[in-house]
Length: 149
Length: 83
Image 1 (spheres, rainbow over the protein chains, first blue to last red):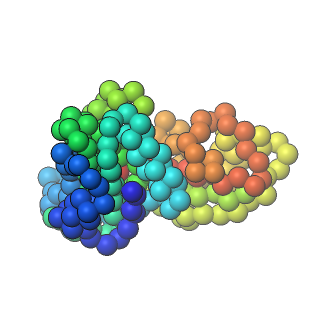
Image 2: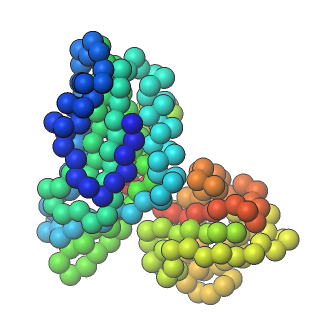
């Protein structure tokens, strides 16, 4: 399932909901990305995530389907927030459920690597006296490329 | 045609979207960029380094040679930074 929202999320609540829907779950893997409190060594005031409504959901659904075809998953969830977020706040949640651990762990890793470079989001970091758009990192691109999407 | 701009491209041009009527000589994304670059200096500056710009047509990532029609929605944005 894909959710793109401004509201916060709860890992515990989401896992509980997914466990109710699925039978014979043996492994749960999750990743949460949160807002750091520094941006280029300066104290961060906030991070605003802009996205492309419609395209975001379309691309996230596509990559979720890719994960479901590559690994034996019972269920998956991606929640990505947008709007202005503050240090310590949640940005993104990925949860994967499977019978065995490797499917859950590897698919979760795959989904978050993909989100870093292909999720249609752009981050604006506001610090005390300035602000800047976050640039894509080469290291993230390399991480994503190893999955051969 | 509807054109959308995101991130620093939106800031540079000063708007998040606009509608234009395609003229006959704009066949692909590259032609559209040439057309937009001639509107004023802001557009020209934004499109001066295409290595840091990505394109989509109807919400699918495409390359600069992609053919376009008046009914298409085109978006310009920098490399994505989700997660």
